[in-house]
Length: 428
Ligand SMILES: NC(=O)C1=CN([C@@H]2O[C@H](COP(=O)(O)OP(=O)(O)OC[C@H]3O[C@@H](n4cnc5c(N)ncnc54)[C@H](O)[C@@H]3O)[C@@H](O)[C@H]2O)C=CC1
Ligand SMILES: O=C(O)[C@H]1O[C@H](OP(=O)(O)OP(=O)(O)OC[C@H]2O[C@@H](n3ccc(=O)[nH]c3=O)[C@H](O)[C@@H]2O)[C@H](O)[C@@H](O)[C@@H]1O
Image (cartoon, rainbow, N blue to C red; front, side, top):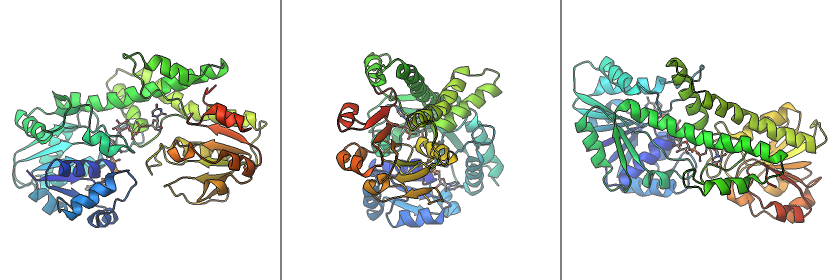
C-alpha cells in the first residue's frame, strides 16, 4: 500500500521516515514550497537529532518522495495520514482549518477506496467531521474509512519515540480499516489500543494534559519547597520511585512550553466547557504554568535589588527545551519578554535557534561573548552543552557572578564553590 503524508512538519516528516524504515513507499505532501524543495534535496528544514541522516538515506534510496501537487498525491496513494497543524484558536479550542482544507481536497481528488488517518492532535468528534468534509469535497461517491491514530513523539527525541512508542492507538468504526492500519504497524513491539475514534482522540488530549499536570504539580510544590528550603529534586526522586507515580515529567523548571502542551491543555479545557463538564484541575494546571515565569522573574528581581532597569542579563537557551529549534511557547522567550518589559539589556545564546536582534536584545555566537559584563546569567533551556561550561572563565567575564538556573540542570554545590551566587527552582 502506498502511503501519503500530508504536512511535512515535525510529525509528518518523522512519521513518513519511520514508515520508510518499516519498508513502505511514502510520499510527503506540503503546500510550503521551501520545505518541499529542502526535503527533495534530502535536507531537513528543522532541527531534530538523527532525522537528517534518515531523510538523506531514504531520499537517496527513493523510498520517499516529496511534492506539493495535492491532486496527484491523493490519487496515487491508498493510505493518507493527515499531519497538518492544529493551532490554538482565539477561544482556546483547536483550529481545524488546515484539517478541513485537507479533507476537502482528499474528497475532491479521491478516485478509489482510501483510508484517511488523522495523526494531528484533534478534538473529540473530528473523525466525524473529517468524514463529513471528505463527502462535501467529493464530486462522485467513492468509499473511504477514517481512522484516528494520534502521535505521541516528543521533539528532540522524535525518531526514537516514533520508532519505539509505548503504545499505538487506533480508533475507527471500521474493522477493515483498523486491521489495515494494525498491519502497517506490524514490527512495532508495543501494545496496540483499538477503540472508537472519539476515545482515541480523547486519549491524546488526556495524555498530554496528564503530563502537563505532573509538571505543574511539581512546579507549584517547588515554590512551597523553595520557601521551606527543601530540595525539590530530592522530592521528585523520592516520589518518582513509587511506581504508581513514576519518575518522568517531575523536573521542576520555568513551566512547560512547546507547540503542544499549552495548546492541547487549553483545547481539552474548551472541550470540557462546551460539554458542560468543566475540568477545573486543568484550569489550575494552566494557571500554575503561567505563574511559574512570574515566580522566576520575581526571584531575579529580589536578588538584583528589586529593580531590573538597565541591568544586563545573559540568557542561555531559547528553544522550549533542549535538542529542538522550536521556540513555540518557549518559557525562555516568555521570560525574555518580561525582562525586556522591565527594560533589561538582554544578551542571548542558543546552539541552534537564531532570533532577530532588537534595541535591547542581542544574540551572540559564543557563550563567553554572551556573558561578558552581565549582571546575571539565566539558564533558559537545558541544552547539554551548558552543563560543562568553563565556569571559572564565565565568572571572570561577568560583571557579578549571579546565576539563575531555570532548569535545575547545574550542580549547585560545584557552582557555589566557584564563588557564584546560585539560585535554581527550589534547588537547595
Ligand atoms: N510537534 C510535535 O512534537 C507533535 C505534534 N503533534 C500534532 O501533530 C500536528 C502537526 O504538528 P507539527 O508537525 O508540529 O506541525 P508543523 O506546523 O510543524 O507542520 C504542519 C505542516 O502542515 C503543512 N500544511 C498545512 N496545510 C496543508 C495542506 N492543506 N496540505 C499540505 N500540507 C499542509 C504546513 O505547511 C506545515 O509544514 C499537530 O496537530 C500537533 O498538535 C502530535 C505529536 C507531537
Ligand atoms: O503532542 C505533542 O506534541 C507532544 O507533546 C509533548 O512533547 P514535546 O512538547 O515535544 O516535549 P516534552 O518533552 O513533553 O516537553 C514539553 C515541555 O515540558 C517541559 N518539561 C518536561 C518534563 C519535565 O519534567 N519538566 C518540564 O518542565 C519541557 O522543558 C518542555 O518545555 C509530549 O511529551 C509528547 O508525548 C507529545 O506527543
